[in-house]
Image (cartoon, rainbow, N blue to C red; front, side, top):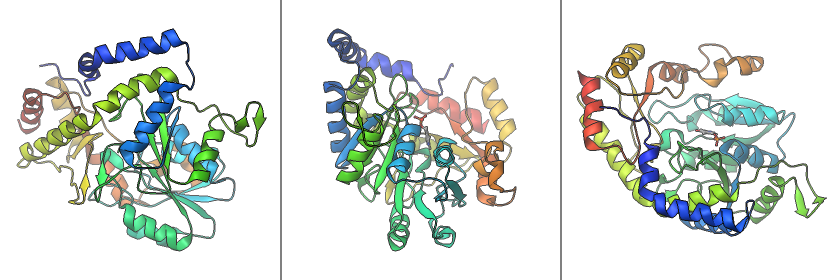
Length: 363
Ligand SMILES: *Cc1c(COP(=O)(O)O)cnc(C)c1O
């Protein structure tokens, strides 16, 4: 059996007619930047999440960068985040000349340990970026409460959690700003790079809209130093189609995720723990195994692709050596990074494929 890690071809086949016709409309209209497809996508993204403003942009990385730029984060500032994430989360902090202050994760959901945040807050702390990893939201209520007390802004890195819920509310509508990614393999993926920023704050929304378009407030009038961080119309058109089917895909992903967990109950692996107040969109279905190298090799020999998100926490990355962290600083992140591995996951994973993956793990 040949199993895809994420079956994007099956998804295209399912929506082909709609996607082709939307994309061809963009081609004939020649409205490639901005325009109706982008406006309607933004409106639908806002409705979907409940946030007042949704702003399309060029990637999840740029969404995070624009959020920090809107808060005037720069040299001398500190931003608290987790070392157990994709590098983009902390990269943008460094790009602006600010300092990443890492906090270890909790072992239940692999997200930042909210109870360790307060001790790390200083007079320089400008923002906290919790990451809603693998599709499950971080402990946003606790984090928001600490941030409010210290007058700090919370930016949810929701690049993996678009579609997840927390206490009945949607990810991307849980903090002052949220950022998501439409990288093809994310739960809502474009056919290229893309992302979105969410906020219910009118001023921040207006500023981020300017920042992503060279800080322009009217044509060739530049209020801020910005970037070219726009989402193009072709991607917006494709995302518009996929968003219509997204709630159904979220349901399928949830079913497939819980089916994995049920089937793996008696296997020698640790399956994801989803809090009863949360639903996960399973951007990754990640398990922990004691001897990962052996498990990866065994599955690979049977044709089951896997991936590791992430093998080395950020505080031990060469690029962040200048921050002065060392091995042992964040023991849970370090332990989980040695044991974690992700299994094939998409709304199009069949039961037969899933059974095959599970048998391969147990056999
Ligand atoms: C994917 C991802 C990003 C970056 O998104 P891009 O669209 O690839 O720039 C940032 N943070 C996390 C947690 C991600 O998974």
